Image (cartoon, rainbow, N blue to C red; front, side, top):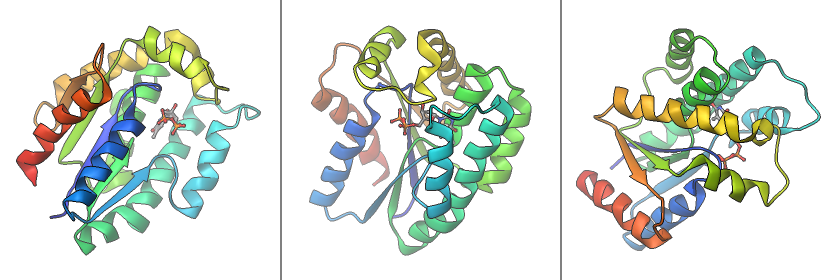
Length: 203
Ligand code: TYD
């Protein structure tokens, strides 16, 4: 079984916790899997990640977009495609939709252009399932503010609210692959079982 699942949502929505729970479940069932995070997970993409998240860097929104896409293009060819060919279930902590949500909606850049560049970067490698974890931006922002914030997180609450709107638009635009998981007032195991309900339909 080999296909791609992506996890999306604003910073602080709890993606990483859910990805770990999913990984444990797949391992219990002996399902070969590979977890990747964006930006990163190839040597070039990790260098790009460092540039993008470093608070000391002053990066214009256009460069920012192109850097995220460069990291993604490399990840697709160096990791995602080979892992799928090996038969792994590939799970991406952020992918394709993050650029439309963060740069298209968060930074107000041309969304049609971002869509075209994204297609170029991923070369038709679109996820079969995309989980969009939905949490109030106010709650998510409180969570991330407890630790030191990186360059992307320093956009503040208003930025997260714009990104959240972007995710709502994405969910409506791609209903066949997008599953919105409402995380408000739910514990992590309840959220995990909602995610498993969908994953079980495909495996
Ligand atoms: P990360 O620490 O991985 O955040 P998270 O754990 O919330 O995913 O940092 C990635 C940051 O980069 C995050 O703020 C989202 C942002 N991002 C974009 O703005 N555009 C993109 O295309 C991607 C992949 C991430």
